[in-house]
Length: 112
Image 1 (cartoon, helix red, strand yellow):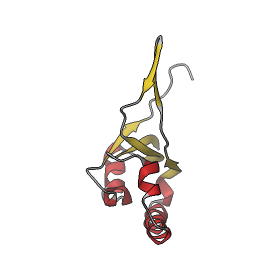
Image 2: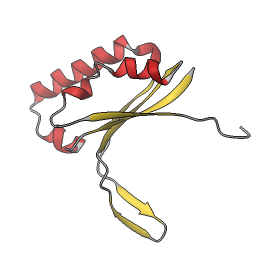
Image 3: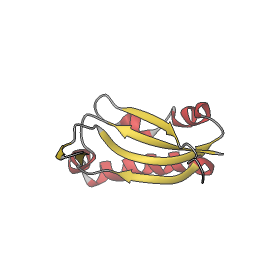
């Protein structure tokens, strides 16, 4: 099986989304995530976590990031098509605003 990095993107940070939820909304949101993870448990390597604020580090400079990445997961499947099928009904799509998911295959490291 191949491994894939799944990046969740949204115009609102994960910390802002969580701060605006009341306890009942948070509980319902987590229930939807847990149902999705149970349905796809054979393909989930690491369910991941929401991500906080970050920094952009370049050679010689550090700045605020403009990334809209709000979380990640690591999954495994036979192909990228299998992963996209797994993500079609993902709970991230119920987040506010225009959200998206990007998927990247882990490539083997040469010589390892």
